[in-house]
Length: 501
Image (tube, rainbow, N blue to C red; front, side):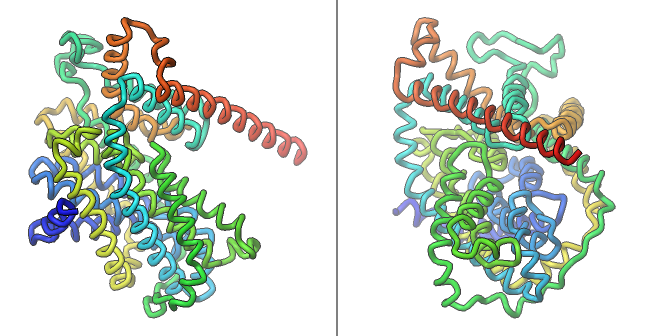
């Protein structure tokens, strides 16, 4: 408790609160502009973190994370275009309510639900992270390996598109992390004679290229799309307490679902929002109202959406496994500052963990104030042509890729992975799975080598201990289940097409 109090006071210091408020505002802005995501913004901020203290860097990036996830609700409600992919479910009821002449009410429900979901997930973050890190510290190398394997299968099984393609994307990410110096022998590998690859691919260059620049390339295709906006009014954003009481069970249930989904590695806020919405519709007494501007749908979507933030931070801090794509960039920020995420982070640098806790909590309240007081100005961001932003984004990408090692080679690496990321998205391969695989690659290799050393080269040892055996079995079950589900879906689609013809 004392550590949390000290961290909160540290975050509230003038030089740090500036980064917290600025990060939250920037996150909301990025989340509110269609075509620009919070993950992209955090990726662009990675180079700047070189010149910050670890406290300021983490405070800024965590607050950006919080702000961006909620910022997408503005365009989702007013334009029916989610600023963030995770806000797509909010369009189902948010935009219809706005078009009924109640944009303020729709925004009020969304902002209030976002705050509630975020606070519930923060409570889970503070409560569960330390016990989980204690458990993780006792895990064997093969246990870590099986957890990573399960995370990759989970990403592939619950992501969009082909399960096989999602798994292949994750394995490709691991492969891309391998060139450079072998951590066990010190010998060079997979460099193909290029000395620029002696230290491997730059983390910043790969992440910025595959995610930020690839996203820009994708958005350029839709740059001329027309948007029809509903005018926002902040006057009716305050929802009466009686109406919130009617939503109490929906708020609690959706927040818990979002938190649990966030804890599951690699799934992300979109699934949390969708599952919360689906459960709310199933358990509602008036399911037919969903999709017509129903308050229950808005509350469920935004609660589940924002609750994934705290949930996703739990495995990142406790085990070093990112709970979402955005957490990949937070992991990179920790590594850049010489910190190793995982079980020992609590032991070696507890003050860093408490800074993350405090930044996550305070930024939710700052977010609520920004969204309620500045909604009129945020609504105007929806009219900013995205093609104005593309040159600025690309400039920051080039600077960021160059800044890490001061070499032009990394800029070409960034451009190469931008093309690769764009191609992966267009061909149905999971870009999120790729970047998560890239970050988890070193952990996977280290765990595999250490496990084989302890077992005298026997892979069977992975089935000799309960944690690793259970994780492998669960990964296999999820893989088979997802293949069967996809096969059934394809047969249904074929049958529908046949009947239509």
